[in-house]
Image (tube, rainbow, N blue to C red; front, side, top):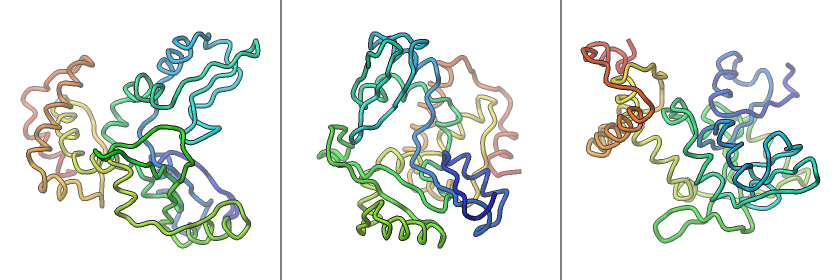
Length: 249
């Protein structure tokens, strides 16, 4: 690929591509804030619940035509079935994401040149509001190439740029913040169940876990309960291997 091309991918895929090329070389890497990938069965379930048949779908949007936009499926007979984003993601799609996504420490495209995410408006509890509103996206340029790409898009009239603080972004993304702060709890539970984990260098996982030991403990218990519900059980006699894995050895 030449440096004039761009690739849009999930944060995990972007990290893989970044590992293959030096910064400043290869395609421009674009990513987005990610909460995980729902499985196909869950997508089919939403369509069926709305009165459609998955095999009749000719066009599908998980979001769009608004902000946040609705889940919609155009069917072969010309009908369209749709539902609100909060209903599709919160009720069916979100709970279906695989465990690998739930133990991912990179939901905000750390390896991308330029990453986009929702700058949600929040309620008094700090939870995002999913009503249809005039939407805003946050752009985070993580490299000089990302800065130049964002400025070029603005100069061409494709986007409008306004400054935003780190605090505003984090306040609009409580789930991403919690994911990073409590990741160690999920990793500990995953290893104790005898499952593999990903090594996260430079993510401060140990540092964050030391700040909130009680929250990490609760997260580990909750993660273990969810894994048991999925059919896994404690891998007895694994204390030493657990410590070795957590230390990255």
